[in-house]
Image 1: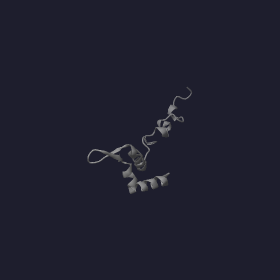
Image 2: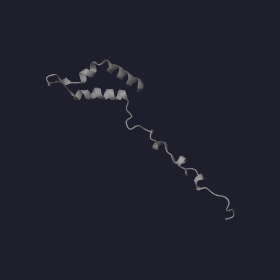
Image 3: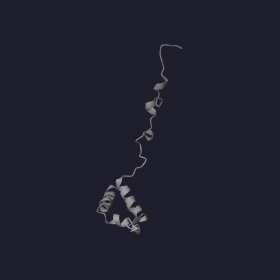
Image 4: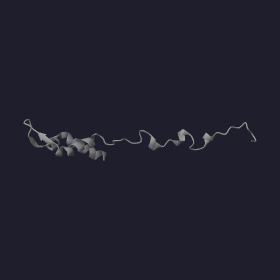
Length: 86
């Protein structure tokens, strides 16, 4: 009580203000919920196509969709792109 005119702020210490308490991991853009990109989805669909049946115009199964993706020229571009990115 020597000097009642000085005002001490309890908010001047390190880590006591809102700005000092923000952690990068708590930011909304710290990570993505789904960190896959387009080429990952194309490769996933190519692998999944082995398990999806192909039906002809008479509603009879004629194999699967993997033949379609094996013949697609985009397949080679995406494989090349994934190889370059990784």
